[in-house]
Image 1 (cartoon, rainbow, N blue to C red):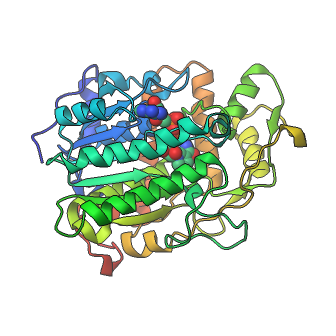
Image 2 (cartoon, rainbow, N blue to C red):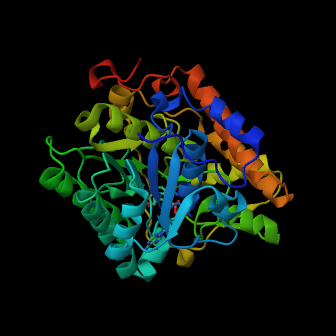
Image 3 (tube, rainbow, N blue to C red):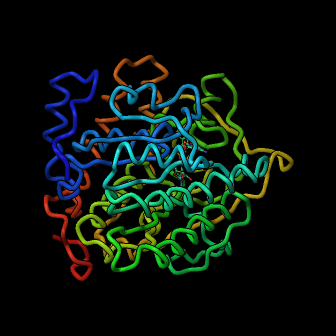
Length: 400
Ligand SMILES: NC(=O)c1ccc[n+]([C@@H]2O[C@H](COP(=O)([O-])OP(=O)(O)OC[C@H]3O[C@@H](n4cnc5c(N)ncnc54)[C@H](O)[C@@H]3O)[C@@H](O)[C@H]2O)c1
């Protein structure tokens, strides 16, 4: 642990005080004063994660290419003034190594990736290089960095060999992937497991885990070929929303669901070490999944504008039709469960984009209001990550 992190540049004193009040009890206080590196900090999930980590009192460094979209959440919520961001490519071993040597993280969340299925058909080589060699490079750097004690590699629910049945995938099911993106995430899992077995065994000070979450939604995503950003763009342009695969069922969840899983997994790795390494699913509760068509319908209703139609067959590519995650392990061993149902996630997300479209000035405040409400709802469910103590053992199911 280090001393308290430096005061974030450009953050008002009353905001710092408000954030400090929310720090100590969450995730067992694991992130107060903790040096954390987030790769992919300029992305959608990375920006939410950095904002939450900063609120938790962490000293946050980031390593990534420039924000992948315009607009970007990273810029809109002013993270550049708050995160010690290094612009760099995860395929560049020397640059990544130099950045890690400067920030000396105690824990790394690895999110930097080419995260989309469609572009992975267009440039499979780039996808494999970024998603597979990126994690190889990170784990190589970690091997020679004495400050690091935990790594959470963010992969995807698409890492599984998808048989398109109604059976939900458990962590020990076969890895696979039809398209280059999915296969790259399966490969990222295999790379991580190989490094864990070969170099980060029980006598190593480094504990490594992977986190598999499904499609997330939330304010501030402008990626191409993602459903909610596609809806927002179409509504803004006055166009009909064109929906590929309306019948496909996905484990939709708010971005805060996967992030609470990553943060709690990280806290448990820091507290309990090797007991929590390996792979973890973080998805919606069983039965809470909805189809693409239902999600678009809910979004249009909550946003108060827009209409949609199904895409023609020729506009489609192969995408998994049915993908369900079994989160029993995370529930039983970490005490983690989803908090918001799909409707709550969509309503929150639509409200955030409505604020952005209306020119709301305090988008960081809107993001923090989502975090505060999510934490309150998780606290009401008695989830252990909302409590002050993080050193539960696996045997007590993480319940403190
Ligand atoms: N968003 C989802 O629904 C979802 C679902 C499951 C898994 N994931 C995973 O979560 C992670 C983050 O996804 P996201 O939605 O925030 O994506 P995003 O595109 O918004 O962000 C990707 C980040 O990676 C960085 N990046 C890309 N290539 C890089 C490179 N070669 N070197 C350094 N940085 C690079 C980008 O600059 C950006 O910071 C990814 O690993 C993704 O596969 C996302």
